[in-house]
Length: 552
Image (cartoon, rainbow, N blue to C red; front, side, top):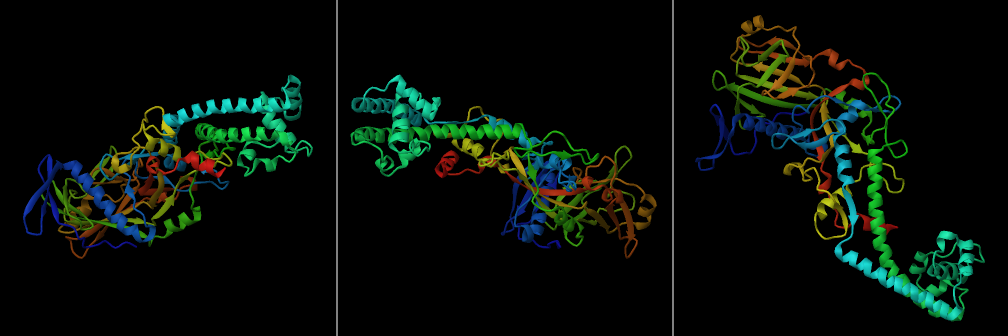
């Protein structure tokens, strides 16, 4: 699928090294040399490797997925249990452990690393628990003043009613309570609004219907139209009530905002910290034993069928191919170039090893050569989308809702109404580029375990064949830090093939058959990279709570 590009329109540069430093030099269009930067050699080479790998892989997938992946740096990289559910649709615990990780910056710019299982929900619950919906100083003053005016106006309504219709007695209150309920009539203002106007003057008492609500009265274009049984002498009471309802609207709005905002937070705290079947939590199945957990995890989903993922993995013609050309700089150093991008120096490009057994530098094995082409093929690559179960207001199912966090982050310490952190966040809520460490996985680019072929030139096939043991199994490591797979036992075996002459031959490293032939729930895929979401930076211009209330 991917053909290595031979030309890139970039200014050529080169890395020169001594024992501790690397210097980057460029030649401009006038042929003059300028030193750009000096860095520690290991860090610069590792950064150059990941940068070139990212460029090459994103170029390969651009026409298919139209997104940009970021390399996930070792040791997070590798081993994703892609078979995400059993026959009963119980989610694979191994899959959950990977996709519920928290994303943070890798040790090198442009890379990411992921936490242990559950890292993102655990961070989410910490953040959401430290958020409250509060009013600005201006809105607090407005609420206080309006409540004061409302209380004064409520007394005016009662006074006007009693002036016209007589004193409201204890017996009157009991009669109203018997009709509407004890809690519906607690004071004289309730008697006038809910019982007299809402039930008697509206005619609903005769119709044996519930009384008019304050909201129905406040929203009426002409309140008297809702009161067909009102006596003519009652008009001054209705006039006083209209003023009261107008005042109450602004009070109700602010009180509703506080109640709604903090209710939202409580639901998300509860659903995240106490997932159940009823609120969208899910059980998981142990991939090794098949046992289903009795406890529940927060809900996640993968919005691709297993068959679709498997079809892509089985398509061995769908390949991302990365070429690394090497040549000798010195007896201990190699010049390396990925996909013909500008070169860099390294002591070791490819190692084949088994813990406590052997460790071979493939440019230093007897009969090998530093002049080589290393081909890495990622067969059957595919993108796996990942989604946390979003919280739904109508059903209170789900746990993930990023807007309160984003709004609290945007509001900061400003004197505004909305969500705010009452405790400083324990995480950097910026983007990955700005070293943010509160990220979630949104997709993974996976493939079968890569095959690695090293084609030697200026080598000695006879010497190599005599010294090389094809029966050994081991692990492969690129540039001393990028491990291909993370098995404790070796997963790769090798085959040696002669070339057109004794000075040319190839060694092909392939995953061992036992890595491929395993039970479904234990099936692994190699993780090439991923896409991420950093929730706090996804802000909206309009307050979340005010958008919700506007729809009610």
